[in-house]
Image (tube, rainbow, N blue to C red; front, top):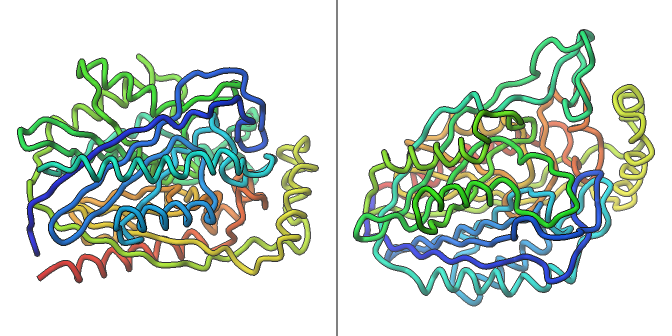
Length: 424
């Protein structure tokens, strides 16, 4: 394996809209009435004499593929990156303008995207200009007490999503597992001081319906880390596969405090290497589209959330009118020294991450969701059989049966290939 001196550069930018936009949240678009926590963009550039990688985290619900492609193309043209090596990661906050098509929401805010695209390109260039000798390490803690699988199996062996309430004397058990691995990438400067921390955990952000622009939980965690470090230390949030996972809402001391504790505990125990192999691979995927020939979910919605039947009927009609045969998406994998990162599109169920980690040849593998393009929730075959919100056909769930399993298979294959190609 080629070991070469590593450099790293970090930059941050404010992406808060200058006006008060319509906020994007599944089934709950609402005009913003103020600001709670500013939206941020953060970029980490890792480089050695052979290669460079850009990890960009954005406090946005997601990006549609058209705009994500344009951003990556501009970054590559102006900063000299390989398209495979530029990873755009959105946090899935519901306190940001509409930047991706989701159920029950208006069209994408083209004006806001036009405003932030050059800012994001400049952000990567700033991180690139800040390159300095660095070291990289990865660590992990196990935190099963912070998350739960919110798809709940009932007595008739169907499934409901806990967001619609839990029926009395009906729930038997969670439908699927959780991924308790809380992973942190640590980047240090030549003196051994931290340049930035990247944290990865499989759970969707808490669903805040307040009419306020807000980065939400990642910003709260950032504030708590800064308070404890007594200085600003950029923390890049890498969401895991949380399509069927939620954070426990009532946690002693507060959720942000618990996550900050985990980040700093792992960081302090993580050794870093000043030499690291960097590599990336990109593959275009064709994912199956949900069947929109009729309103297949009508009976399930009538039982579980009848007030939403008209909304989902309209969503099904909209997708049918698009007349697309499949969902065109992309998958990226990165080699980061002894660790790897699988950058998945959309919001996959946690089972995808567990399958990828099980098959990965790397010492540690971070599986990150909502990368590059927001393709909606990617559910398991079992979930399609049992029904529930996460599989109701809409712009928030356009990928059909088998899509999540195919995505996991392709990610595992690319990880194996990148491992073999970067070994000597």
